[in-house]
Image (tube, rainbow, N blue to C red; front, side, top):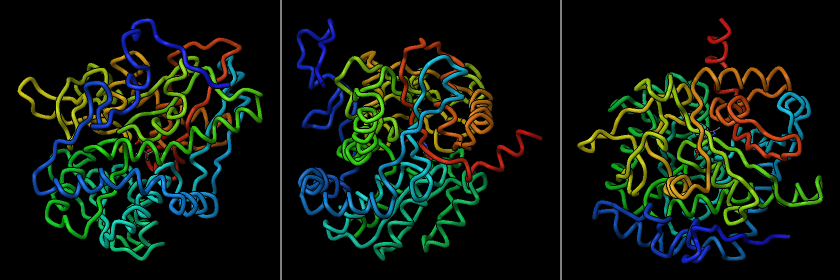
Length: 408
Ligand SMILES: Cc1ncc(COP(=O)(O)O)c(C=O)c1O
C-alpha cells in the first residue's frame, strides 16, 4: 500500500510541493526557464503542449508499444546474489543496460521523437556526453526517418569512439565541439546555439533532466517508466512495492529521476545518489556538482553548478563522460537541499573498482556512469534486512577501452 509520511519540518507546506514541480517549473528554488528571446516561443509552445501530448491516450499507446516491442521493456529486476552476500543486504539491479541501444536514454528519446512529430518538427538536434543519448537519438531518428544532428565535445568523441561510429552508421551527423574542455557542457552550448538559429523546424531532444522548464519535468516523466516497473516487479518478488533504498548515479539526473519518480513522496524509501568525484572532491578535478556547487544558471535553469566566485563556470572532470557536467538537474538540486536525497561523491578509482567487482561477481560489465552508483556499496553500510534497488543505467561496451587501460 502507498501512503505518505509528512516530514516534521514540512508542517507548513503541502507535501506535493516539497519535491514535485510547481506549475511554473520550479522544484523549490530551482528550475524555471532562463532562455534567450529567440527561443521564447519554442519553449513556450513546448510548455503548453507537453502534458497534453504525453497524456494523450494515442501517444500513450504508441509510446508503450515501442517501449515494449522496440526497446524490450520491461527491463528485468535482477537479484544480484553474490553482490548481496558480499555487502550483507539484498541488492536488486534494475537492468536498464539491457534496453535496446544499451542504456536508459532510449526511454526519453522515444517519447520526445513522438512529441516532435506531433509538434510538426522535421529536424532533430541533440547533445551527448558518453554518446548513449546521441545513439538513442540517432536510433529514433532512423526509425522515424528524421534528420539528426548530434553535438559532442571532442574529448568525448575520442573517449567514446564506438558510439560515434554507431551514430554515423545510424545516419546522424556528429559535430565535434572544440570549445571549453570539449565535453558535455560545451556540446550543450552548441546545441542551444543551433536551436537559436533554427527555432521553427527543429526540436532539441535534451538527454537529461536539465535545461529550461519543461525539459526536466518532461524527461523525468518519460523516464518514470523505470520506477513504475520497479513497483510492479518488487510486488511480484517481495510482496511489497517499495524498497528501503534506491540508488542511482547522477549526471544531469535522468536515470535517477526515473528510478525515484514514483517514490518521491514516499519517505519509507531512502534515496542515495552518486555523483562523480573525479580525481577526488578536493582535487580541483571533479564533477561533484551537488557538493561543490552554488546557485546559478546553466543551460536555461536555475540550479547548483560549479562556478567561480564571479560566476564563471568551472570546467568539470570525471573519467565518465556521462557524469562530466558542471551542473545538475533542478529536481536533484532541490532533493539534495531539502535532505530528501543523500549524495555521495564517488571518484574515478572507486568507480573502476566497482565496475570490475560487478563484472567478476555477477558477469555484468556496467557503464562507467552506472559504476559510480555501484561505488556506493564501498562507502555506505547497509543492514542485513535492507532491500535495495540500484539502477544499472547502462552497459559497459562503450567503456571497454578505459577498462582495458585500467587493467594494464
Ligand atoms: C549509461 C549512462 N548512465 C547515466 C548517465 C548520466 O545521465 P543521467 O544523469 O541523465 O542519467 C549517462 C549519460 O550519458 C549514461 O550514458
